[in-house]
Length: 290
Image (cartoon, rainbow, N blue to C red):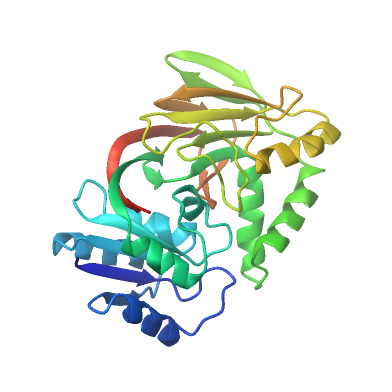
């Protein structure tokens, strides 16, 4: 099997010299190519190049951002996407069963098989896990700004999320589904291709990456104590109590607002001027699953 590993040398919290990591990769995959990303978007370029060369697989070594970038270069090709988790949340790696020690992940990859996977798009940008508007997008923006000062990882993220949670007042948005307009002010509105954000926070327990649909999850703006009491249910993969969430399977949606819309794709923050279009492309990507 011809295989290229794309390594993000600054991904997540796991500290390993890129040269040492390359040696470990080659110890398990002797004939593999190993490339380090040098700038945003570089993983997409490297993946696209590998697909054009007809390589069998491209493996993203990093977090969900690196996986997302790599996937963009492999859409509608015969080159499969593999994942070695090296980030903070590792949502997609968890979803496809690739978590473990580095050695365990290498062994899983050796025995993996290719299968088709759906992808979502938010204003034309791909997402594999989730896209969303609301408090999570606000937190993503703040976290991006905070990360510029070196504060990365899950603990700083959850601390920031808690601080934002107690101050956040959701705006009214218009959501157009099948030609019908709904006016909602949710705590967050999620479009899920996979079940989770990462770190086993499961927002859409019935979502499937190859079911041909997105799970749209409305998280209602209930009293704070009810939201807090419901949090363990998300980590257990259960539907939370109190009517906190409502879920519908969709193929597309449009979100409109009278103000700028903050949203995220796989945790990466974005802005758009009042209009967000969410779509999906079934079985557009080949992935390696153990």
